[in-house]
Every structure is written in structure tokens, then in C-alpha cells.
Length: 141
Image (cartoon, rainbow, N blue to C red):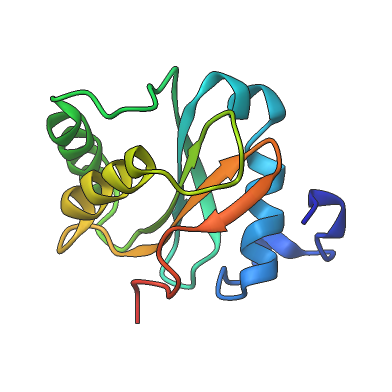
């Protein structure tokens, strides 16, 4: 996985290939973001091409109690911009590339906020060691 592996014209390619998704996440999620803890929402058009990243910095490992409200407000704002968008979400944090309970908690909050409102292409964990899908199959048909 490396953003250096991205093919020419990757911006015009749909995010429907695991390797491309991992390379795009490597491009957008800097090493600093991985050590600081960051939530990335890559907004994509109806053809699954990245149109806009959204970055929420200084995200705690454990989701705070109001995570559902924060994510709900974020999804409401996204829908207010364009209703045809879908999203690829990345949870960036320090530590090993191993899924812990708090990663699953974040994924659950994200799923609940986005379901039936903004289709998800997937939810990934990104650490200094790489990235892994928290949901093996894209959630958008």
C-alpha cells in the first residue's frame, strides 16, 4: 500500500477496488493524522470518484458519548450539499494495525449515522502500519 502506486488519472477511477482504496487512503491520511487520531470522510460522486475530503482532527480512541450527535450533524451537512454523494470513511489512529473494540465502536457509530442517509463505500482503520477494512464488503451496491 502506497500513494506512490496510484495509477495516472486515479481521480477519475471509481473507488471499487481494494488496492485503489488502500492507496487513496494512504495519500489522504498523512502519518501525522495517524499519530494524532483523525476521522476522514472521503465524499464521492455517484460514480464513486473522490470529490471532497472532510477531516475531523483529534479524534479520541474511545468514541465520546455524543459521537452519534456529532456524526449525525456531519451527515446532515453532507446531505445538505448534495444528495447523490456516497462516502468512504477512515478512522486514523496510532498503534498496531489490529482491530480493537474501540475501533468497532467507532465503526458502529459511523454505520448508524450514515445508514439510509449517505451510502457508505466502506469503513477502514488506518494506522502508521497501513490500513484494513472494518467492513469487508462495500456497503453501496
